[in-house]
Image 1: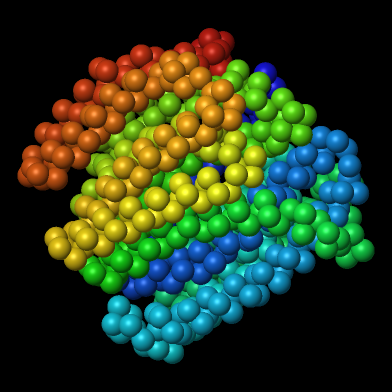
Image 2: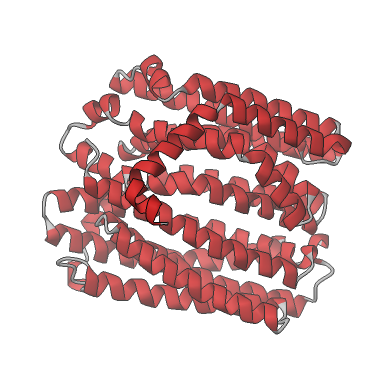
Length: 498
């Protein structure tokens, strides 16, 4: 049963994500208008390399959410304090170590390459060092946020995220108005990171029930006990997250740094559209953790988990179906980038599958099956890297990105196989409940749309308008569903008052 608290968290997570995404989108637009695509591409690449380091937390981030949620369900607050203190020490040490490694990587593999030869060494060194320090603070603040999420305090987490996003927007606006240099963009990143770590630290100490941040709670045995679960999961995260960095590095090296900006632009739109439903499902990890500790996980998977995938799939038909031609036009005319639009079209196909599989993927994480996740992400990485490398070398284009779709299909089959083998998961029933076969129709149409746009770019307007009406006709039932839901939420009386 999905409780009122779960629904409230889902609504807050979704609304907050939309608000943060809109503010972030405006900030990104202002940033693009402040610099040429090549200069910004360099900044994005450097930040991406450092960002990859911040994702490697040795698994203690997910462990924190999982074990705090389980301990909270048992009301064992002493254990929660031990988890917080022990993992905080790990994060600080790991953050410093990762920062040193990333700095060494920069000096040996990026600083003297032809890709960045057009930028003064002193300026690029300054930017990278500032970003390295800011990412260290972001690394620790990310851990503090996981503590709040482990408590299922998603509303508090949402408010803090909004505050950080607003500060970033104000500083970016100043950057845009006064036409400041790219170095100031790095300083802004550092300022926001400092603000974030102070805000999250204050919230953890003064807003969470029975939390006492004392070194006396440090317990090395907890680190040893939970590190196996964490590292297995984290290795899969590291491989998965490195795909983004590798794509930017390869496109920047073989095409130009401008293509890094085009790719980032497309990913921004993807992250916004796909992130809305993923944020709504954010509490699934906590719910699964509670069922896992109570030994009711199998029952929940077979009887209730489909609800989250169904909601995600309905969203697919609305955004990646009916609205996708509109989004293509928006990218084309707002960012003036045909390449960004094409990359966006390439990624919405696999992301329509990723959105429904997120809750199922969380089951494997809860059970600590890091080897399974590592295999999935390693296959994804290998396919994207090989096909993109070949397409860049032989054809000098980025069509190799389509391999991400094939990799995603493979990942979905592996997840279904795991759940069927370990939890008697009824895949056919699941497909029926979430209207999976309509998703197949959507994928066929998206592939056809991409193919026609690629081979007949001069017919772009006709193709997008035609497909808009095709999606509208085929998926009109889902549009009616959302209209009814909106009507139920607002009510006749409220509508008439308007």
